[in-house]
Image (cartoon, rainbow, N blue to C red; front, side, top):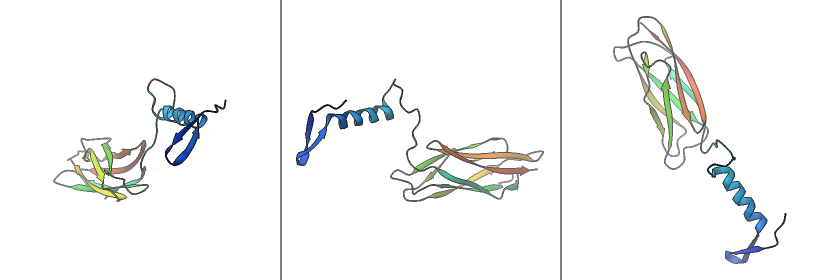
Length: 141
């Protein structure tokens, strides 16, 4: 339905009510509480890759692993926080968050290892903006 009413904007621009209703609908789809709309929205860069080096290491005794996370485009103002988790914190412990600085596309982080009695496979996962990537690490006795 077309509403013939127009609204004046700066510089004598006119926008029809149909356009305004469309904007209100879109706004509601993206953020109205209690309504249908979108349940998730990706804003900002996503994770392209997460790597660990080395991929196998003897646990404990100050032995650490270098991790790198890379995002899809340069981090915007405020940077990008990547949440990090380990599938086995008894064997390998990443920091809880790695921050990618404004304008950068990657950051490094250190994973601490613990002594294990048998070879232990660990998955390190990074998550941000609805995306995630994982890397496999083996901690040996």
